[in-house]
Amino acid sequence: MLLPPLIPDTKGSGARPYWSVMIPTYNARADYLEEALRSVLQQDPGPKQMQIEVVDDCSPHGAPVKLVHRIAGDRVAVHREPKNNGLAGIWNRCIERARGEWVHILHQDDVMFPGFYASLHGNIKNMNRVGAAFCRGLVMDDVGSWLALGDIERPTAGMLDGWLPKICESSRILCSSIVVRRQAYEVVGGFRRDLCFALDWEMWCRLAREFEFWYEPRVMCAYRTHKFSTTSQLAHSGIRVRDTRNAISIITSYLPPRLRQQIAARTRVTYALAGFNTATALISKGKINEGLAEAWESLKCSQHFSVVRRALLFCFWVLRRVFGRLLRARSRLGKDDASYISVETRE
Image (cartoon, rainbow, N blue to C red):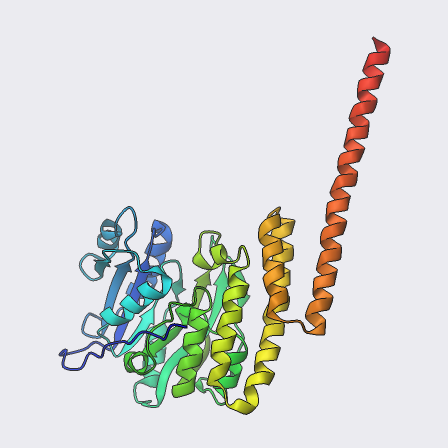
């Protein structure tokens, strides 16, 4: 199992801005990236306080230099990697290139709402124990319609008590909603390359083991879900469930021994049941192989009674669906035969 990569410190690098807003891109869709950039620029306190940089992961058609220049002129830097790093690799490059005290990795298709940076700055600027801060966020679809709101962790802004067991039990933080002290990354290391889907969740748990978290209950960002996103692509063929299962083994090792087994078992059940829901949705869309793979990986995640029961119901549903199609096909075939016989008789 790979260890998290080291993040070099920036001591002696001279004057530093407070924020580093780092935007990793790969084959960025122009309208999404423009919306993301404008949502940051409308809150821009100036280059002395905020570094803004697009970090392109060697996109086949080049970095979006012209687009960024049209939107922001020289205010936003653009860096292109010489080779593709993958998800964990490009996020780590963003951290390495960040010069600010606090790092915000903003996905190319997400949106920040007015007041995000000012609100968090006002709360965490004198909080040395805080290693990460996040707000409540929402999930939107490809055209910007709201789909869901994140859970409220506490009714007012403040420190989160007992946060490690809670974050280890389920992934509760949208990537766009969280900022991390750069020194905290230097302590815990970067994102793990042996995870492809749950790498962000594992990172928040690793940080929670070492640092306090600050929470803002106001909805101040939007995470966009669409069929071309990395998350959506990993939902197929059971990759997402398999990666989550591996992450749970890592994450629960961060807990006190008395809590590990209990929380691990509960977490595996939660994600196994969610996997069967995804499998059902995939098969309903005609993606049979992907749905069956998702179901199989979900069953391997946990063999709790509730999961086995869900697996049996899923199998019954699939069989009923298959037999239903066969009966409908047979019925259509019978009608076609009857029509053919009728035509032959008339002739």
